Image (cartoon, one colour):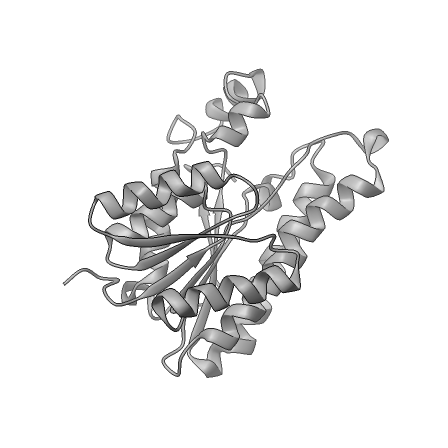
Amino acid sequence: MKKLANKVAVITGASKGIGAGIAKHLAAAGASVVVNYASAKADADKVVAEITTNGGKAIAVQGNVSSEADITRLFEETKKAFGAVDILVNNAGVYKFGSIEELNAEDFHTQFNTNVLGLLLTTQGAVKNFNENGGSIINIGSAVSNIAPPGSSIYTATKGAVDAITHVLAKELGGKKIRVNSINPGMVETEGTHTAGFIGSDFQTELVKTTPLGRIGQPDDIAEVAVFLASEDSRWLTGELLLASGGVR
């Protein structure tokens, strides 16, 4: 039997990149998957189509993670389609790098609303929809909370908050048999890192030089860790930050 058979997983920001990779791997491991997206419906539908073509179960549900109404609807649609939730992956996130001189309130609120408030609201919604057997919450943090690169003050602050929230909720939810862990990736090649200009940049070149494994990550590298944290293989882990960065720290 597949290790996530009969499990239900909700993945936020799963229309592309790391989220899409995680959705596909959880489905391949047997989970019924909810592909949440904010605006990229066509991409989300492609992820669902790939999963179902390969014999898995998946639906796409639109929703802004920083909207309480959207989160309520996300879990209502999940319950209608698959029942109670067993796995939540808080992957939705945004980033914008810039110097302290370029910092503005709009960038601050945009990043904190999605990366921190969105994670909290989605977790709150999931906790209401887990069954008595508990489950696994997987936050997607970032290696920036260790590396603290210049120009990332807002983004690094949001991911530092994710680290702290992971520790707090592991203690808070343990009594409900809900485990809370975080995967903290280094640079991963995604549509987002291409659009931001990181791929092929001097920044990538310098980062690879300091990476013991000699390359940047791929979505599959992170997705395999997510399958581990979603499964019973990690049943004795909670409150952990798994630095998935090829050794960069």
